[in-house]
Length: 156
Image (cartoon, rainbow, N blue to C red; front, top):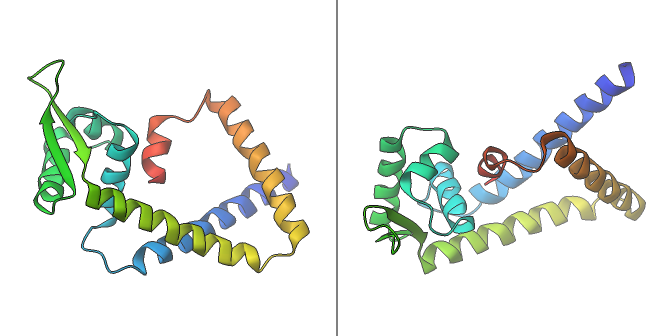
């Protein structure tokens, strides 16, 4: 039991370190888009045709809050609203080309930041980390029946 608790503590500490590396990569870029707005763009980018109500569910906020977030993103040219071709009462959200560029730049900065940390690790430790992360991901999928939308939304 003690080993498991120590391991869980180490995993949590590593996750915090990873979050710090990813956050530093995000904040190193002068952007007028807030972390919450980046999360919204990431969610919408990965789920074409999302509407405000679904976005609110994924963010765990009330629809009016999600709508205000969309208003701000639309005003900056990062988000588009369009009638759903199947049901004109619904409005689909989509990211613009400038939002896709921003998200790709962020992804690249994050990759480079993680790679810089990995480069400071011995090759054997990198390989062991890879095996461990794959095993952890597989165990998480089994334990939770797949990655849920809340986890995906938080990772953005």
